Length: 310
Image: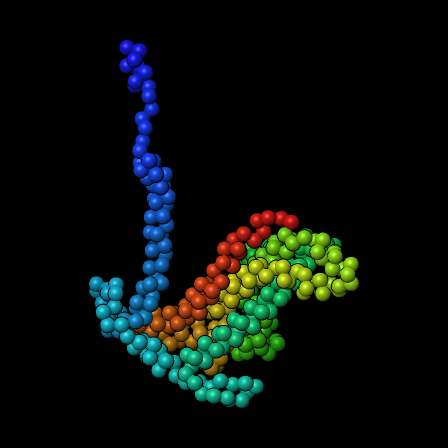
């Protein structure tokens, strides 16, 4: 009886193959779940490009074609033709005549790049002041800036429009860019990042005779490159996809941004032209896809900004 009990108490031994599979199984299940989530998330983007390459007569076909049997650039040719031609102007003088679709690309790129550069400059200056320069009421001012996040953007449209009108900036690129030269999110991100930098480096620069601007440009900005890159990416995405404010400010078709111009091209008295709609959306999405893959590592760094305090 004692021998039988001791035999039953012995643990069941597993083969090395079974142990390896038991260790890998949770990881495999997690990978399968992640692949399914990624497939569901990327399907709208896939469908966007599939519809853009589908002939206009087949865009509303039932059942839909998951893989286009006859891919074509017909929708791209139509959107170029429907958008018409415009004139690129510099200083009020016409330089060259080109398809309006290309002109809208140039307008959007100019606004996005120039606004992003100013955005990063002013946000970094404000972030540096709040992170490393102590002055009376600094915390109060910072909390007031953060409180601005609770104000819906639509509430500020009328005051901004009145201000732009008084400055005579209606139908100008400056009128589109001026309200966004600094942003609460950018100030917050850079303030959190600059806080992690050693203050001793800035003090050493001052001891060596560097001015405040010199310490900022030679010490703080180079060390804040990841935070600046994240802010620039978010700002570029915001200005590239901006629609409502450019729609309000810009009045001339030759000055439209890509998002505003495509909204008029896709409008039809016979209903929605899904071929034009998807081809225009695909064209607008390509630059952002390129920016994402080119600066993918900075997106991950942006998730960690402010996680460690210095």
